[in-house]
Image (cartoon, rainbow, N blue to C red; front, side):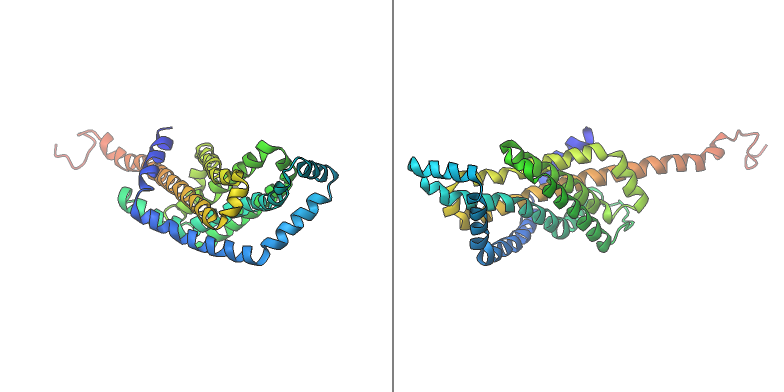
Length: 290
């Protein structure tokens, strides 16, 4: 708990560092450019496809007809765009996490290591290709979980909770691995991930729940649709900052755990090496003159 809370407060303080704020702008620029490009190419077709699917369901068509009868027919034009945004949100979260992991985490590791752990040896336990493979494999599993749980999204609370939990698990897998990739050896990395699995997973789930905050913007309905060019970049930047904080949290935690692991393993070795000399009495020590 000491390590968990100490890493949390350090991460909050580091979020105000100008370098961290500047680094968060790179994923923002890439994601906003990609979002507007995909919106320009596919938005109308996606909305039409969702609206056609809704109209093919008798119950949904009954509800939309009832809205028309009570003078709320304008909501018909809002439902489909909002559903497209809700369905696209998990993908936006996944992309934000991967971009932070690839673009920000190495720089964050260097920042934290230089300021807190300057003497911590880098053993280069995983190259960038190993981290890439780990991230892509974890992402495939997360996408599979999202697809399998998609029917449960019809239950309103689960539509926010399930993506947050799956995203939290993915945050734990990606960010913890990337935080240790440069400093820890493969054996050290496996030992830390095994010994600290519960707190690391809790950190990931907490991050996933925090990352659900921008989804509140979707609840503004027609207002969000009208202000999407302004609110969408804001939501994406919030995602980037949340995962930047998560990356800082995992880096502070795992590097501190690595330092403690090495200290714990080196102390017995040094004691064992010095032990036989310390146990020699003056009579047994040949270097002591008699």
